[in-house]
Amino acid sequence: MSTVVADLLSVLALTGSGTVAGVLFAVALSTLPALIAMPPGRYVYAQKLLGRNWDPTMPVVVLSSTLAEIVLAVSTPGIAATLLFGGAAVALLGVSVVSHWCNVPINRQTRELDPDRLPEDWHDPRPLWRRWHFLRTALAMLALVCTAVAVTIT
Image: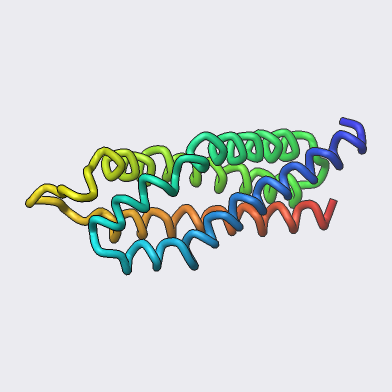
């Protein structure tokens, strides 16, 4: 692979993993505490509004960054860079899996509710959603660190 292509992929991987980590960190730091503080009906209403632009965008950012990490892992010389780019790819795949199988289904169920008429047996999904979100945030931060170190040593 040419140096120019490797440099462009490195920028893509670093920008992508940084964007994913930054978005998830911001949600954990600001949005999630606000959602948890809301009464149930307002939480459901807010949840209906929040994810409309994230849902189509974040999978593209996560998966394109993962692909860039994989290409860099298999084409960059040196075991350390290979392991770091590979570790970043695995961490970003973890973000994708946790999002797709854990957080997104909770979001879908919540968005189906009428915020003014919650069922009597409604179970608040926020504590479970928060645990899954913290896991994917940690994975995203790990991916960012691995990518930053790999880019620095190559």
